[in-house]
Length: 229
Image 1: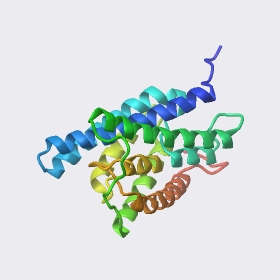
Image 2: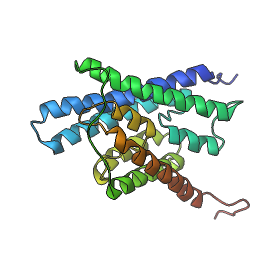
Image 3: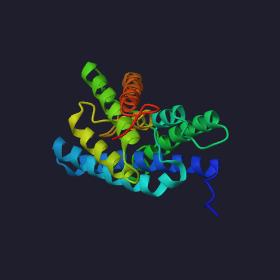
Image 4: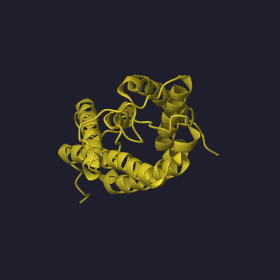
């Protein structure tokens, strides 16, 4: 008999736990990096990047078999649009996924604060705005969607982690590429934070990027009846 598919409650728990783990890694490593880097922002960003990449890879490997390891509302919406949410009520499942991802993002930021003896409840004062930042977020999100949709079987976890690590450095925004991450980081006045006033611009740019990534991925899909040689 084939193994039983995970129940929706298990998938939601995986999405919440995975998103919490990701945000805890992003925020927590940012705090540690800033404390140890001695004012060297390049070193701090490198440490923050490495911790995020490693955590993301591990979380995708662990939780991917349960929920697909989206940890990202836009990834969930893209998968839903492609009919890849294996559930009897995919629209409702997608909504639940997003709610639990956002909850996980908040819990992950709070957990990082608790570990570093920071005030649990806070909001970021770090403004991140401007055309360059928005273009960067669109590019980061488009690339992420393209990587997810085009990754060969069994290689998505490594490719996604590598792409995010690279995008930390080649995008002006340091590649949030995730509305849930924007929420969690807006609630942390630390190295990785983003001011709530800057959040809408980031999320809108990410939405545009997700559509671009989906469109580019479709360019590489074989047409019906296409003959391969």
